[in-house]
Image 1 (cartoon, rainbow, N blue to C red):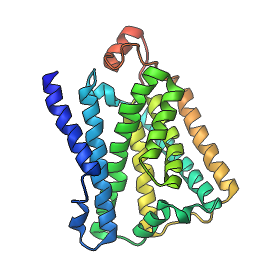
Image 2: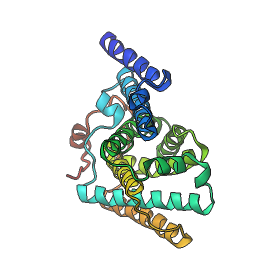
Image 3: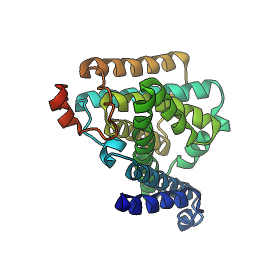
Image 4: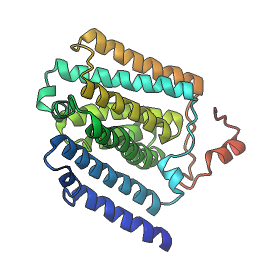
Length: 276
C-alpha cells in the first residue's frame, strides 16, 4: 500500500494542478486561438487521465480491473457496428440541437467555427487533443473508474446513468453537457456490453475524429430533419441490439469486484464464453 500511495497521491495532485492550475500549455500557441483551444483541451484531458489512474491506483484491485482495460468481449466486426451506432446517435443528438436552435448559443458552435478550414500542424494538434486524448481520458475516467465502480454498487442502469451524467458535467456548457450526457449513455452501454473500456474508447475516438475532420474540411450532411434524426436513433438502437444479441448478455460483475479475477480466469471458473 505505501508504494501505491506514493504513486497515486502525486498523480492525483498532478491531475488537480492540470485541471485548475492555470493555462501554461495554451500560452505556447501564441496568438493562434485554435491552437490555444487545443492546448487548453489537452491540458484538461491530461488532468482527467491523471485522476483516472490515481483513483485506480489508490483503490483496491488492479489498475487494469478498475479501469476496465481487459480485452473487449465483442469481436472487431461487432465493434465496427457499435462505432457506426455511436456516429449515428451523435448525428441525431446534434440534429435535435439544431432543430431546437440551441447550437448557436453553445460551445459547440464556437468549436465548429474554430475548426473550420484548419490544416497542417493546427489540425494535427486539434486531432491529438480532441480526437485522441479526449476519448482516452474521458472513457477511462467515466466508463472505466466511475462506471465500473457504480455498476458494482448500484447495478447497470444506475451506474451507466450516473457515469453519463458525470461525462456530461465535464463539458460544462449546458447544451454541450446535455448532448454529451446522452452520448455518454450510449458509450456506457457499449462499455458495459463489451465488459471493457477499450470498446467505448474506440467508438468515442472514431466519433470525435470524424467530427474534427468534417469541421476542418467543411464536410456537412445538410440541415437537420426529423426523419434523419429518427433514422440515426433507429440505426444506433439496431446496432446496439444486434451486437447485444450476438455477444450475449454482459457478465455480471462478481461480488468481489474490484478484487475480481482477470476475465480469462473467471471464464475458466464459471464457464462463460469470451469471443475473439
